Image (cartoon, rainbow over all chains, first blue to last red; front, side, top):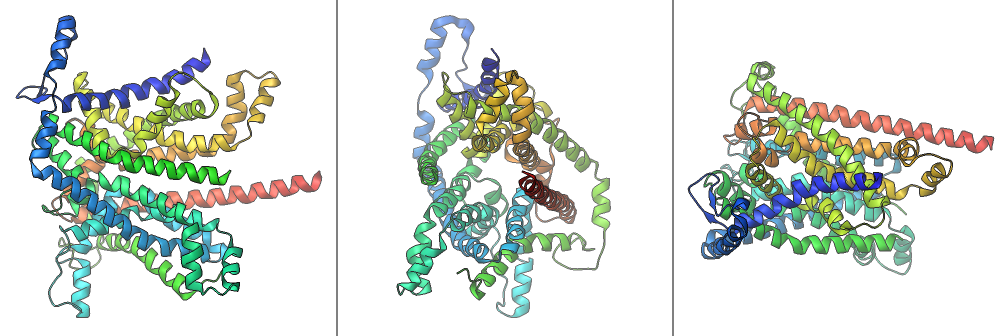
Amino acid sequence: MRRFTLIAVPYLWLLALFLVPFLIVLKISLSDTALAIPPYTPTLDFSGGWSAIKDFFSKLDFENFIFLTEDDLYWKAYLSSLQIAGISTLLTLLVGYPIAYGMVQAPDEWRPTLMMLVILPFWTSFLIRVYSWMGILSNEGFLNQFLLWTGLISEPLIILNTKIAVYIGIVYTYLPFMILPIYAALEKLDISLLEAAEDLGCSRLSAFWLVTIPLSKGGIIAGSFLVFIPALGEFVIPSLLGGSGTLMIGKILWEEFFSNRDWPVASAVAVILLLILIIPIILFQRNEQKAREADQ
Amino acid sequence: MRRFTWFNATSLTLGFAFLYLPMIILVIYSFNASKLVTVWAGFSTKWYGTLLQNQAFLDAAWVTIKVAVISSTIATVLGTMAAYVLVRAGRFAGRTLFSGMIYAPLVMPEVITGLSLLLLFIGIGLDRGIFTIILAHTTFAMCYVSVVVSSRLVSFDKSLEEAALDLGCSAFDAFRLVTLPIIAPAVISGWLLAFTLSLDDLVIASFTAGPSATTLPIKIFSAVRLGVSPEINALSTIMIGLVSIGVISASIISKRAAVAQQRDEQAAARTS
């Protein structure tokens, strides 16, 4: 009986507040927009009995999904989200790997402090971290003032409200997610393998390419997914740092819902975003599974 | 053969500069006397004064703290239960669905979680306000708690629990007296994680908050959409300060605890 309660309470909570809401999204994505409250039709009416339910299902269709393929705004937004998430993941890897590598090489007594320095930003508000770049990247911002002062540029660079600002924002906010798994992988690396490689005539650089990189592959893959998956549906970064030209699907969904009040289309956008995410999520889980098996 | 080279030192310096400079600049400019955020006009704390007189911000901060405390506490209870079910309950009908529902919210884009919960609340006619934000935050935070707690549950020795049961403890007492003290650090860090996530959340709160309740991130977001503001710089500085104090003292406490434990273990090894 106790076991039953223990299972039932969290189970029912998640069913009611995770699965059911998602099924509602699915249902509304198949409904039609209507000028009513709630602004879609048909609404399910159980009091009408079996015929009402049958009628309800017959009215559902894929119209909203067809609409998404016809209006090229959505196509472009999905593609540009994939592109922005992909490029930023690569940039985060390029920035994060040397940091993780430096942390592993650092003296032992530094490690707890370095570790804390990587984790601290994670506890700081995401919104504030994104916001801090607005003052730096704007036309009269800190970066432009600095570059003008040094004489490197003669006119302010336009960075805020472009894709570049979005890349910077994603790299900055998700960097700890890249550093930590790579650090964990590098820390487990058996140093005698590197010694063996150098004894056998490898240069330091080729030992790094041939031994260190392949052995930290698990960390690289895990870190990349931890950046790519949330970046794909990102809303805050493109809306604060990106301009009107930076299409990202999280922003489109938000606008479709709050500005256009088109719930069925917003729901269809959400369903497709989720379908796109399933592939990287499955790949990520496989990578984790492999890592667990390797540990045992 | 670990060698800390110039390359390592440079990449660490540049990396941490990148991570911390934006926040340091933000803190410095919060003490700027000028309303123009990019022109330095001398040291002043006046923006902190105007911030403390801004009733809308204070109300939002209060709502945020209430939501975070309540939701993270419920989430910790539910998440610990869920972790216990995942690790200890063995097989039961619908287990795959259960573990799927625990892990899915972790990777679900916030806009989708927010949208789906809003559609549910409207569908069942629940008025949006503090209560609905609490429900939403509890739901995604409990999944994070259960991941943190279950990793601790997996790693500890199950025979300790079994010994307690053999010695006549009821299942609940065995959990209370044996399991809970062992997993307590994970439960506490789960609570802290849930609390921070709730404090920080903009997207899900925007969907699930009604006109009667506004949280601090919603307030900040609508203010900074229009550009940089010195009041928000002051608010950010306060938040960064609080978090830094919290994280640094937590790491000092846990370091001391680790040292004390090591000493006890050494003492125990000597006496035996």
